Length: 636
Image (tube, rainbow, N blue to C red; front, side, top):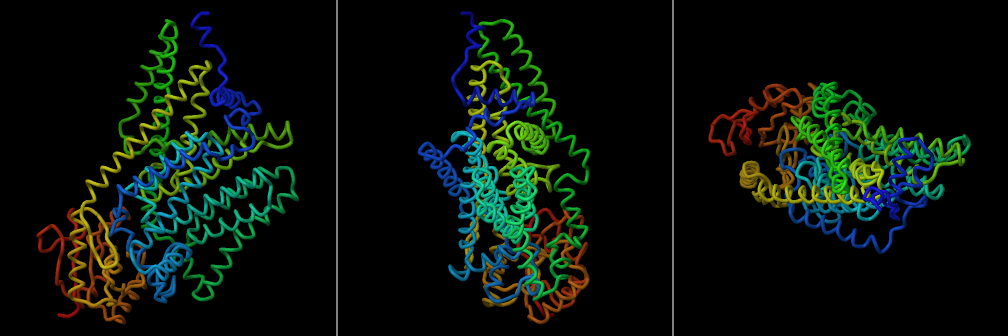
């Protein structure tokens, strides 16, 4: 038998052969795609073979927690709001009126209850973040196992652990907003219930999915939209051609999904007003200031959309080039004794390397997920075509097809806000891309090997992809662990908790906190602007202002007058200004570019009594490269 004939031998490996047939089905639009994807129609049950994988995921998470211990969050940006708002609610202040908050009520009230039970300490909400992280990883593994085998699902979830859950910017332990963390957890729970409903048409599972979707909307409005959109898609996919069943299932799902948040917000509006919820808190995207719109446009590539689309196309080309390199290796390894195959392998390798090099410049910081919206759209088109063929030929689609479509729809809805700049960087992206990461791995381990005609080449392609993904995840874990240990070295010790952060930031906060400890009493009112009210929480002081964050556009002229009244009513003795440059919002300096009326009143009423920071400049300005905190004391 010649080597060529040997390559054409059939290999009884459903993991590889069935995947190949799946890809051929996708390319030809043939029915039965889900039957050949590598898993049977009924999802593979979790069993003993999953135990080592689950233990590996938990071990990876434990290593990440050890490497990042107390290094979560930033004492300057966002953290103060997440620490302080629940405490103010626990003390009896009213959300949206006495305490300004731009997200739903679920998370602050949940964390307030944790404070009541376990005490007001930083470790309490961080502990809640750890629990939520483990729950998210468990849900992701369960969902990934609906599409992949244990080893593949493990790689996907470990990738999410390091690139989303435990990365310095946007970790799940002390996130920029617990509302988005809890919303993501509830979204994934709703998706899991919807998949259960697809598998076994129990109405209770659909109702539970609706409850989770409603709770997600109470955490963060847009998170509820993701779950509700996916739920509607699930009902239409399952009940296609059955109008009465669609109406019945739609009511079962939408009644809690929409009714629950509607009832809660109606009760809140009775206590406050609809204007407070819509215009004052931006809950329903009403009256959003131009500064916040500018921030989102710049951060997510909407300021130059055509340039962003070009980057997506180039990033996709780079991934295709990488696939070509791996494909060439597979061809060369199996064609060592066949001259024509080796020539094709070398030609493919050179062309692919050229494509990778040509598309790498300027794309290194965007990550491999940039083109995923295009990939998700392609998956929906191919899967949708197969779905309608199955419905036409068999009366309904199989479970795997619907599950894959649901996860793709969920992922696409999740990244809609960031679809021009989908990356593993950024605080928001980390909670929006986990399901997309699962499908990214799915494309590599399931779709890519199926592109090969020869069974042994497909086997090698699968092993090679698994090895490359494993090494990439391991490299990310080591890099992030080293970054945590080398960058966040200062121990910021305070009465309510400890944070480890960058030396200049930590030392400045420590000095300011010790100053407050020496010159004021616990529960005294202290104002910190534009951000940094973690000082109030950590050193047991109370925020004088309704707002925890005074970023550009957060308060208008009336809001500035209210802030002045709050400072007078509480007889605030200390007003602190942090060097928080807000250039990304289109206005850089507090008191000069925005909120100048408030700052003018402070300058007339207070005097500079201390400045803390590494820079010895006696008059540093907001926006200077070195961090500082300036303290204003009441009186002349």
